[in-house]
Length: 465
Image 1 (cartoon, rainbow, N blue to C red):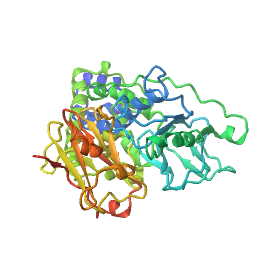
Image 2 (tube, rainbow, N blue to C red):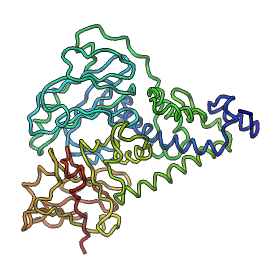
Image 3 (cartoon, rainbow, N blue to C red):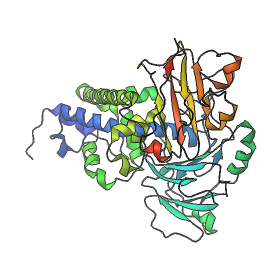
Image 4 (cartoon, one colour):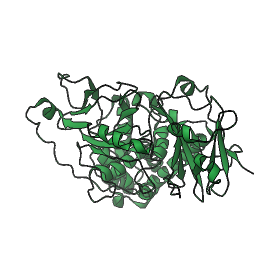
């Protein structure tokens, strides 16, 4: 292609963000804006997930630290308002967490036999935030067994004693264990189950010599959620994460396009070296990305997009990178086959929800959410999307609580959603709200077909005059 250099400054700017001189002539500021928009949409989930996993598995000074990589940590309680690292946390199922570094050798996860009526799951999430595999009640059953989790560079065969081999396309992944808690008195039973979960290298499982250690990682400092919105260092963090994400065949062209403006796995991106013109081009791309995000967020609020559309495998998402970004509202949410998340952000009249008003949510007799495990409804304050402190320490209402809830004349149940108690006689059915804006997430664990095909509809939230 014949060179069409706009100016020496443009060549210098593009060289400084890692673009080969041979390509500099092909990239104008307008193209930088277009590619930066695309890369920001593509990369936001990776950067946001890295922020969380750095706090969980790297930064031992973080209040959210769980354990080093390849070690399991059990949380023998559910989330409370004191837990602030993750948005829209699930408070139904005590978690066990394992950040897996799959570079040196595969990791084996072993589970005990779990009683058939107790739901549990292990969700495998890669660095892209794709839910690439599951184990547990729905997929592998409640029997005892061991699963091997392998990284992109392992080419071995399934060893004896392994029921299934799960392959990840990224070097670092998250394994999120959920174990159902029936009620507060059940916590010791959950602890007993958690204590029997096991995470170990394949060599330890087989009793053989350990594989050579992988190179030490020079972790980059993650950005805060606010910095992810405002700092061009975003692209440097993205480059770091992409360094542990081998290019998928479906994205070769995409990643080549990103590389034209210096976005490439393992390469440094220094925004301080950008000229004012190029910095403005990147910032314009980020701004346009947020406009696109706002449009889809509105569709989510209106129900035109559902949670079932934005969580899943690479194959399911099929290039829907904007949807993958939208999913960071409830990052690490389940694929719809494992759980569905009807969201309440407005009332039946379309007005945003606020603790200044009072609401009711009524399930008619026989019209509870159709599930094969259980369902819940959880309250979150906005804009933080965190749990709400309240005088009765209740953050959700779920199906195991139904026997304790006051029934309507037809056998259905009305939940009272408001900031202040509805009175002692109705307090069993009270879901406390904050003073200000809020949203509610319903969770349907192992949804039945009526939920999956849309024939069951979540009831509307009605404002009380």
